Image (tube, rainbow, N blue to C red; front, side):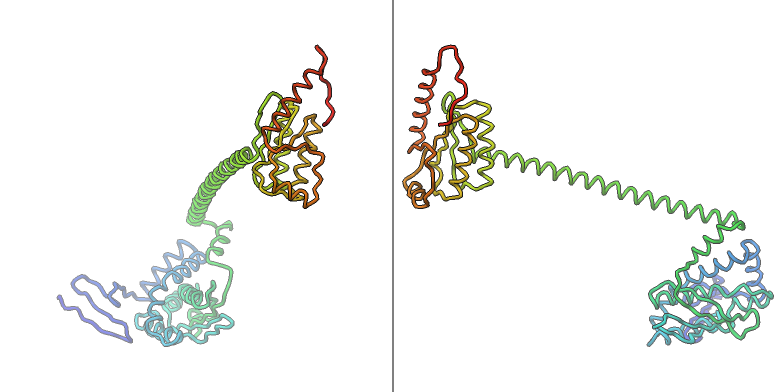
Length: 384
């Protein structure tokens, strides 16, 4: 009883596991069934439950989902795609699926023609006197060609064993219409069953879950972008404060005496810096009502026409607010440059040192206070 008879037919290995009551084909459990009676009765029962349209759709979908092992067999035993299908066809015949034949394959047009001799679907339908179509084989061939051509394909049956043709024949072409589209159209009719509605509800649930997932991903993306924007704003605010601190350090304005301001100028004076100097100085003059402003150039190594022009604009703007501008710290080298460039600085009152300029401002301020009438107002001063 423990004997396990084995046989190989056209490369298909059969084994009878008598002890466990099984037949193995290529090591996998298989079933032998009388096509014209047992199988036909099973299919009639299923057909009565779902109707022809649903029956055909389900059979085609089952065929499409059953090709994984067939693809492996084609890849393993082929010298060409045609050789692979030839091997697959003889193997199918050995297990009672009918003899499969690849009639023609046109890779340029992405078309293929198949025939199946004595298919199990055609035989049981012929015995029943019906012709529901060899949909399982149509699904298989459509799925195979989808892989071969790299696009979605479906098979159209052109010959039917069940209606008296010598074989089942199929032509496979690319199409945009899927099995899901056919099912959707069927569910939309008045003939929709509870099973159809259950399928539609399940699909709707999947769509809802997918939308929730997308919304959650979008929410996280928005939160991440908001976080990044806040970080950027924080960094930009820090940079702005640092720039303001740097400008304050590069153009400091000091109050040396009552009514006397000084702005030490260090380094290069260009149009951008001169604008900042002018803005800061005019604000401070307005705030303090300073009578004298000293531009100290001790920290300026060289001066050119552009720098002199910028400084003259600062002096002119300060005068319009009623303060007298003094310039200190012009070095001998700078004085030589001014002469050689023929720069007109005659409108400026200059001093060799900041101390000398401050002494002058204090003395002039005291003199003006002495000359002013008691109890009167100083009024508007003329520019000096």
